[in-house]
Length: 320
Image 1 (cartoon, one colour):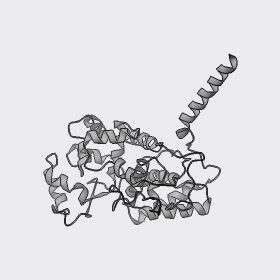
Image 2 (cartoon, one colour):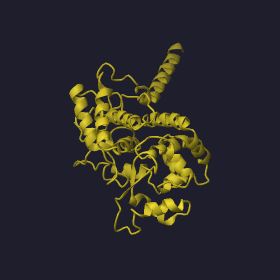
Image 3 (tube, helix red, strand yellow):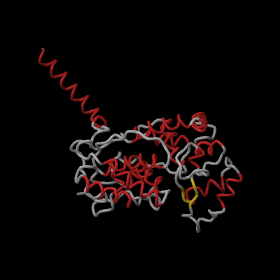
Image 4 (cartoon, rainbow, N blue to C red):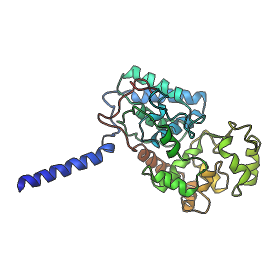
């Protein structure tokens, strides 16, 4: 009787360990002994890239988001196509849109020089996202590390899992919920649009066809985004009209004033359940910062590969 109880206890313990292992193995001091200069090595390259082009900070932050939403934060986004799989770079949400891969290459080269074979590309994306926010004036946080890199990628998962700018509020909420992220997380993470730019093809329909948009704002955006889909598709406009290279809460102020650039932006303040939270963030930057930090940490916990799963890539673009 006693031995059978012991077996039950052991099995129960093993189940608990296995259930909790995905996130439990991520720690903020994962490389403190194996790669003590990791943070300074990464930040110097990120700083240099943003000094050359301020927009790059937003692009690097976006890489982390687009990676984590596809089978977890595993650097699958960084893989080039091979004979055995089609990567995620050519999926519709990424094609001609995600950028900054060469900066990640530079970071990986510098990190490999400092501590070869130790740091995953997935963790480099997580640190780079944090550094980009901080360098552009946003809040800082302790990044949880210990992820390993995927050995494959999925174009179909990227196509299906990354929410497009055409999504309604309910679709946005569902898309984030599918990743284990709450509505608050979704609204806070949308605040990443306080930096960066969008292509005309992603906001054309809004500035010509929607009514919940400030008229003068729409007119300004039309000047560089023709109504015809035959031209200007890649012309850029700032996601945040006032401070597109400074991380702040102006994004929410714009949305409250019907100056959200993309349909999905304005959906956050269109009479739905997220109106009150957008109002709060627009007037309370510290609340936005704290919720953004929580959401970024939570997003970084999406299905990481740990332990003996995956690998530590030598080159972020290909498997070992």
